[in-house]
Length: 168
Length: 168
DNA sequence: CCTTAACTTCACAAATTTGTGAAACTACCG
DNA sequence: CGGTAGTTTCACAAATTTGTGAAGTTAAGG
Figure 1 (spheres, each protein chain N blue to C red):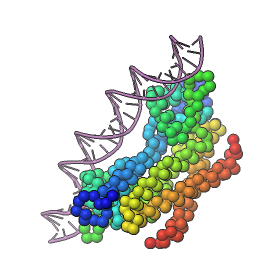
Figure 2: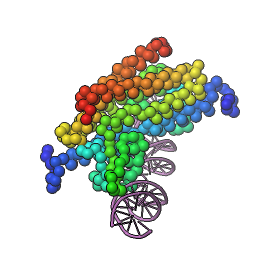
Figure 3: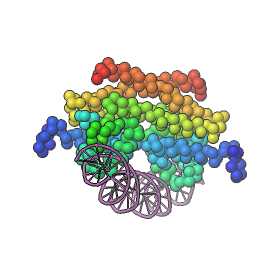
Figure 4: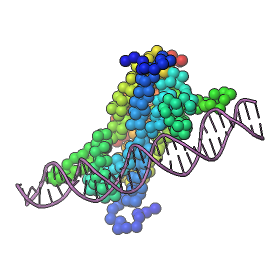
């Protein structure tokens, strides 16, 4: 399947990329992320520069500046993109950090904390001597365990990554 | 804070438990799970038996049998609860498996596969020699890595759990 | 300072999701 | 076999979520 009809002004198969963006966004959506942030993120991830301006995003995804604004706000709260000013202009660029976005994805410190807190409250509501309380305490222990292990796992990944790709 | 007003026919502080159920469900909802499955799951988790009938769930959560049915279908597809027939009756019970639901949560084989597939397609759409393609290939490698490591991590948890709680 | 490019906020219309009641199944029990 | 307890399916109304246009805000450049 070659380049789609058109002016052929780029080397990228823009149609294929656009299809990928929607596809990848759908996976995010199934993972519980809203559609627009998912699309914006997928677009950034598949851009060669790893960064795009608000206008470029709106253009490529065919959405309003308002939608881009909202999506970007969400993504930067999640530490999945960072925003940077193009020096000497009012234009902002949104960037996906090459080797850190998926760590953010896996890390999710906040989320972990909320689970642990909810479980702790559960144990105390149920009473730690009841069957339900014991089950919940065990679940809590599991979350603590994962919370300890995840950073180690990420550390191992960094080493592996170093081997595979060098420092770049 | 003691038992709420009422007949005091149980030892559980039902109000506190109810509050916990809604709270815990909210954490699930934020993690991208629909409200009703989340509530049903939280109710099961906080029941002493670790299992409830459809009627009990409907009663406790104040929802229709239809809602319970839908929630339970979803949860069992996700392997988070299993259904069992009470022998000699048409009544079904839904059970949360003490030490396996969170493994199901962490496992997520299906999900992993979808991410990997989407990323693979991304690399081929973008071309593995482009900057975007390389970034995506690296992400793919990360997911593969996690896919390998997660089962090992769970294995370690099982050992740890054994130490802490015995085989039960 | 004033103009204006760029981003953000807000109220609202459209689209989607959710839970319900009622009807349709299913399979025990007599 | 028929009655019925229990579950599932389905069409729909209500609630929620989503993206938009337009107005509001911010700060660069004259």
